[in-house]
Length: 503
Image (cartoon, rainbow, N blue to C red):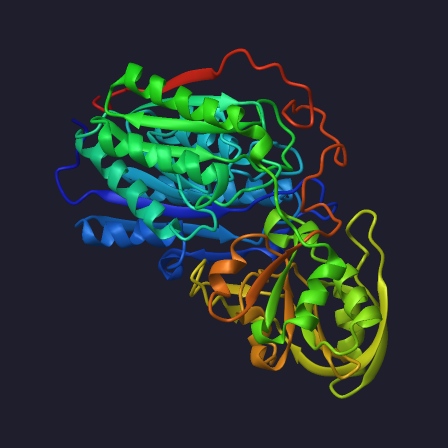
């Protein structure tokens, strides 16, 4: 076997981005947090953190490469991606690793590539050859492609949405990659693809998706030989060939077993497709709950159409307009991506009264809102996520300003799209969450973890490019239910792996 005689040298890194092509603003270098060398070890609350945690327990030499991570947004600037790819390959070439383990999202795309991670992994495999094991841990909302599976030995996803198990995903990816390196595992992966997206009901603990995950756990527990079952609920705003739900079953060489299990779980998606719907509150109804049920305050309202965690710009003003126009008794806080208004507030200075037309400058079809208020806080926007999702990781709003409108609504203006699923977005800007009746987050699921015990969640139906509605968005390459009429006769399956790493 191709096992090193001394402590194995394992290279680790991350390129994490979810890219929404409907967001007209490309994701440029300034939207990413980048760590190099030893600073990579600081990424604790992530899949990369789990990779590092396991390797530290495994008596290996860890070779930190580079970590590049940013909030979901528009397509990644292609020149920036090329520069990161070049640096990653150069660092790998300089370190001579025995194996490579990466934290990737799986739904990244550049301004020129629909499958950024597939491209990266193909380059990486050509660079290191067939004998170096490559393992990756993905987000379960990955657009899983053949290139990802063809160019890795280990490819698994986190299993929960909200993503409470990303650290565990990293630990498992590291464990399996080391098994491959030692020759203890010869993974075979069967993928089963269903041409559909989930219009709603994306939580893995309840509803039809919960039932499918329960069945997957049951099959994995009772079936000898299954190493991993990963279920991918494709990012709904990607436009590429072979969009769909994907089930992968990894075994230690047992192809027929993996095929049977993968097809069963894949058909479960199709058979239950009409059940994948969300139960959202209308805008007026959500604020009426906040007004009429004070015992449950503060509320945390999910702006579903403008979800930055789905790649939307974060510049919608519809909820701001609602509370200002119709709910004068409510106090609240929300974020709006608007670099121009931040600059105006900075120029005016702390304590100044400003009139600004905020938001609505990026998202197609949305409009700005004129506000008048007092500039009460200015900052560089740096903060640390409280977690648990990505807890302990550095993030940034870019330069930020807080304008207090009508002495009751805190408008946090940000230069960058904010990871607003986390309370630290508000507390880092001087806002006491106990002093407000509601906050608005640009997240659909993960905020429920990070605000647990702090605020009562309400998922609100709002316009924007962060929420799928049939017939609203343009798809050129993709064909999937419910956007298109699909007459599914058979499940598409493919086999990957089964190769030894022996020279």
